Image 1 (cartoon, one colour):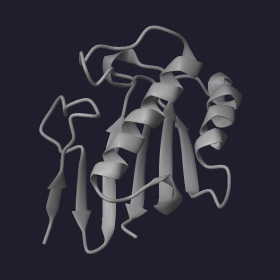
Image 2: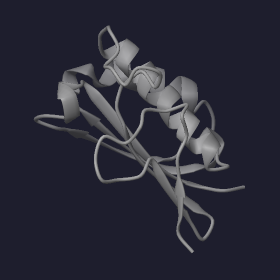
Image 3: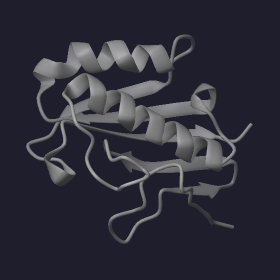
Length: 126
């Protein structure tokens, strides 16, 4: 049975979607953008600060679902400018230091709220 995952430790969904869905031992996390979970507002800063906030939001959703970065199987990174990829990749690597998941990275013409980065993930529940 499909279970909807929601946590106050990550930004609330800003549309008709769930933060994550758990089904049959898998967790499908919606894309996270750099919103402050307490205020729902876009954080200050550049690509580095936005990437950290996105990954912290994703971490909160994973934990609410009973998963973790260690159980992530696949991520998709959407960036506004692939010229920022090296900075995003360096920060991303801190969150996946060993046995990183499969990944795709896509440059997107425009992301929600004109953010610079969005990351979604699929994980398993240990």
